Length: 445
Image (cartoon, rainbow, N blue to C red):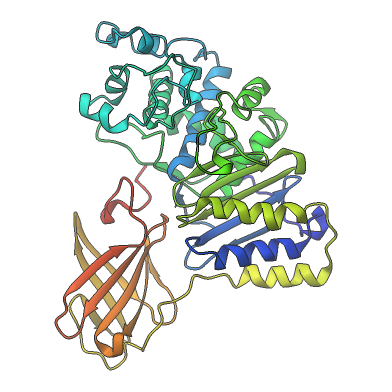
């Protein structure tokens, strides 16, 4: 397994006080919840940490940060001569030629998909799936673009789904099968899995589960212009196109989302990045030789980047000291998400789905698709498999509140159990985008 050398911020020219300030901001900013952070400079780890119950070796659902992994698969296939960026999308699906009659649809090229510039003015996923519930590529190509392909930006999931489908078509296997010996193994990414649709195809645009370390490695590969351990994985020309503006997007609402778009990478006020819903980030700062990987459950993703620019960026090439490095090391070692506050469960009778088991408690919930069962910690997170839970008595004994975390994803469910009736109310802190409670976990290979 390829691992990054470990160093200290001071040795890498980063002021630890800036990293501490970033951590404090991530923990205190409303609608921001960090799960992990890994900071690289000069290819070495300056700082890394995981907020318990999240851990270094556990994968995390990346949502749209998956797109950047899909694009790497395309780039490797381009280098192998299997995909031509200027070929039409339709040329890879000749069986659809008679169905797709709109001239703009017929002119969509592979590079247009990569740049989210298919010519559609808005997201098409629901409409594409409605047109053909069994073939998303066909449904997408049957939707005539509003403008000439290549001229307008619209964040559009079927663009990336179709890219993954092209990789599968030209390689004869799955996207992960293609990536394993050509990207994952060389980078030492041992654990990566991908959610598949009903046809068995990886979603491409989402659904990738990978570790924080894997995210950092992808960023470092692009920072190194496609070279890893002396071998070339991606062509330099590919990296140049992927990490520069291919289509303007000035109408996006937030400042770090309106700087242009490359090949499944966003341009930013500083550097470029891949990102995914609820705060999954791969930030690459070529001028500073820095990569920053972050996972989390954050509704305000702009606030995360604001904190990076405010606290971390000025700390690069600023002197640090041993005391600050030590304070940062202690902070990183003690990271944890807060436990549920309230009175202890001791003395409480079994109530609804919460039952005493030995000296502890266990929550067993019937949910759509099956049954969830997890031990419930008090004042700390109890972890079992892909679940973690913590509970307390609240409202002067009128209810038990249990927070249930799906620790291979960003998601948290608040469970309220009324006392003594046992009635249960479940509310998501963040709504899962394409999974239910029983599938919020690393998919099987």
